[in-house]
Image (cartoon, rainbow, N blue to C red; front, side):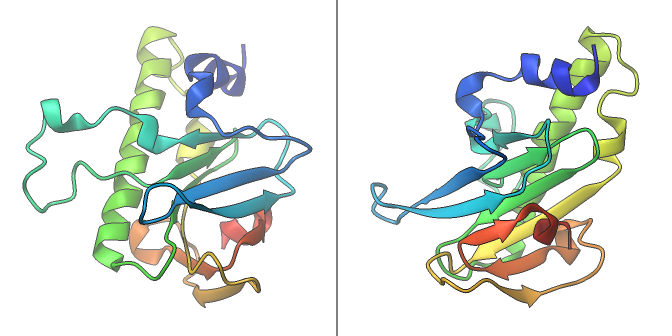
Amino acid sequence: MNDFTLLKELLNKDALVPIQDRQAKLKEKGRDGKSSYVVDLEDLPDDTLILISERFPQPNKVFDCTKKNGICKRADYVVVNEKEMIFIELKRYKGDNDNIKNQLRGAQCVMDYCVAIGERFFDCPEFMEKAVENPHFVCIMNIGQKQPSILTAQSPNNTPETMLELTGENFQYKQLLG
């Protein structure tokens, strides 16, 4: 069984964004908790999953989340295939960069846990190795803005500190790679 197939079997379907015709819709809840804003992703590679990383249980039973160090934060989504992982945080408006970086790091920890499960429980010592070695970090802000634009582009966007900052609501997969 290849890594992608195993990852797909490991993850609960309720924790995944549906992908149809290589397209997906990412949602950000409004401040009222009811309304939502949508970001469309297009031209997703075959064999891609989108994990809703916020579905991973809060670690506050183990860690002291009252401290302001950000260890209990998680970004909204992780787009993953065998070649790369893209950690995505959505913001209706511009957000606090330190908080966003912590959210991106937290989502990376969720994926580190998934990789550890594959390695230890399924005896796959190099589980998702190519994807782990090729992370990308993206924050999409000002979601209601129709025309996509790049706010900050540092190449490569392979750490939370060098995240790609975008505005808009419609993106091609390759745009997220920086």
